Length: 418
Image 1 (cartoon, rainbow, N blue to C red):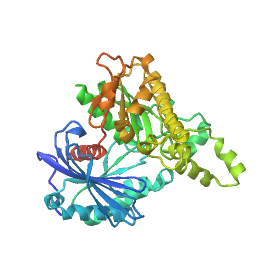
Image 2: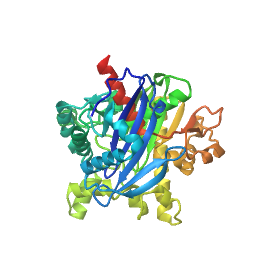
Image 3: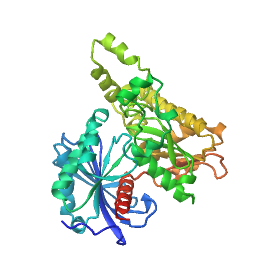
Image 4: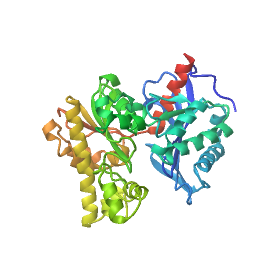
């Protein structure tokens, strides 16, 4: 394995891994050494391994927008390490791509929880491993999955430097008034209880792509970004810096999500423990795995399925979901005071005109004038969905986390070599 000599070359190639709870997305990305935003990079290949550990399938993306599934087949992925090996095996079987692995500039892995130690991507090391392991309790399964992938990379791509980027890094700029919880200070500090925030890779991508599109630098932009998928969060960004976000100590806080409740009265936990004669862990499983859209609608957490249903439970679940997103947007517009746009990203945010209309319907008082025809058309690609003269703009933003991970890791490598 021969790594590229550095980012002074005209082009660089990165292999990035983005693990989920039971999925692993991977992208082979070509970047310009001097690119200013992640969206300027090019995906050479993109695929995802779903249902890792229980009959995995490999889906390969392609098509005009790179988001169409062009091939799908069974894969051997008994765990996350096995999924990483399956991904490398598939890449080596693709003749145009296999050579890229031999001259790889770097490999990058997304890590969910990095605490407050990191404000950006860093080269993976024994010290970084210890930090990731120490935070596993706050991101069960996720942090360890990233470490399992990194171990495979060390074994199979030893010549390429490995970097990690953290979902929490973008939110390290939160002021204390936002990150501190109103509980006894000594107890909170002794136990590291504070808001960290997540989905930072996605929120940063939306910020930088929007800034580039409207001809501004990120530090000139004040917006509310929405990452809406099975895991969802909102972020208030003032002049390019995250100043508040809905997820907290863990990814359970905040918006209603696919199977997570989001924010609820904390007294619900001991109340249900007593009433159900069960443990705190069981109630946390209820809040994480059997709540949200799934818990209200029953049968599915996929909004594409729920919008086709005509029963009251599904309708209620969708109304609750959009209502709570609107509440968060309103709160962050008030916190920012002078936001210029609301950006809808993530699978639900990008592809669901009904959701965007429901949310925007409550924002006319802030000066948002929705262009309903533009909103209905905006189901793929970057699109403004508000009227041209709207005081508060709204955009649908296709998020490419793989490009953002590659961009941040390449920037970290460049800083090492400067």
